[in-house]
Structure formats: C-alpha cells, structure tokens
Length: 283
Image (cartoon, rainbow, N blue to C red):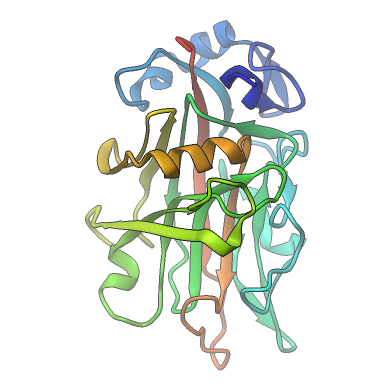
C-alpha cells in the first residue's frame, strides 16, 4: 500500500474534493479561498498539498468527517469519563469540548475521524488549540490506527494537569507509543518515548499551533512551527508504518492524570480553532 492509499478523506481518495463547512471544495478552490494561509504552516522540505481542513464554522459538527467520542466508543478504561453530546459543540468558529460532572457522573467531550479521515507516512497534521484548565483534565490531540490496534499511537500534544504546579499549564507534552516487535497491537513489547516543551504563557489561556510531520524516515513534533523533537529510530518508524492508516482525535479525558475536585463546579473547555491535514505530493 502506498502513501496515497493511506490517506482517505470523507470516504474519497486524496485527489478528490474535501468538505469544509459542509461544502465540497477541490484544491484549486481552497487555494483561491484561503490564499497564502494554506502554505504558511507546513515545514519545508516537502511539496505539501492540503488534503483536509475544518475551521468548525458551521452550527454543528460535520458528520461526514467526525464522529463523537473516542474511536472505540463513549467510555474509556483509563478513567470514569463519559462522552456526551451536550459537551461537544461548535461555536464562534471553533470546536469546544467541555468537562462537567452531574449526579456523580463525569462528563466530557471527544471527537474522532475514524473511517472518515485517515493518514499515513507523507503527512503533516496540525491544529490551533487552547486547553481546558483544571487539575485532572487531560487535553489531547492524537492519532492511532484505524483498525484500533494499539500500539502504535502518536500524541501530537497533551497537557498533564496533575497538580504539580507551574508545569500543569505551561508545559506541552509530545510522545510516541509503539511496539518493539513493530507489530501493530503487540502490547507485550510496548515502548513509550516523550518530549516536553515550553511554548510560552499559560496554555489554557492562549492558542498555539501543534503539529506533527510523519515521513518514512522521521517523525517530527512541532509547536508554533518550531521543532520540539525528531524521532529517527527505525524500529519506531517501522511500527508506525505497520499501524497505518491512522485517524485523529481531540479528547478531554478527566481523572486519568490528576484528580479533579468534584466539590467544585466545572465547565472549562478545550477549544480547537482549526485542524489541517497536508500530504506530501512529491511521494
């Protein structure tokens, strides 16, 4: 399977149109509409073409690209969090995932593109995000195999609010999970590598752009266009390729890392301004 077969947008091939605000656009009309903004973000060294973009400008989530919840469902084994539709909304040109609790139930928001938007090596994925600020709120922008085999996993960005102080809201986390055997789904040889970064300012009060470039020979994490970490290990890269194609997710997991105080009223939101997926047309 080649790289173009890895990338699927709304059930179409990479060369077909894509859905933006409910309208199918080809690459020429996207360039006319967005101009230089299309070419501003991806790193150099590749011939990038925009394959998918959502600016969340509609009144509701675009169902042709997104499903509510994690790719596997509305609950997770890592925490008591339950995803509910009331905590997933689009407003003011952004996606908002809200954390609440009611009658003893922890409720939150998550969205995913499983079976709708997928990608593999030869891609650059990015989003502009402001995080929900509360101890116990694990904000994440990440990707995993469309088959649900785990590992591998690429965490484009997370913040861990575990009540350690300044780090909670000022440090971004970027990691990769993979199997030492390189076989997708082999948890017995699971490995996890991570890096941290200080973008500047309170990440729950400011927007930053978080991205990851996935090529056959390297995986690179970026924040605001600056390289955070390059991953060059052949075993890691082979394991990622064996798990492709991946789908992407935005999620707000509560009480997985840290513990939110249920004696207080919640309501903080993870806000996604936009998300883009680019493909390297030179491959």
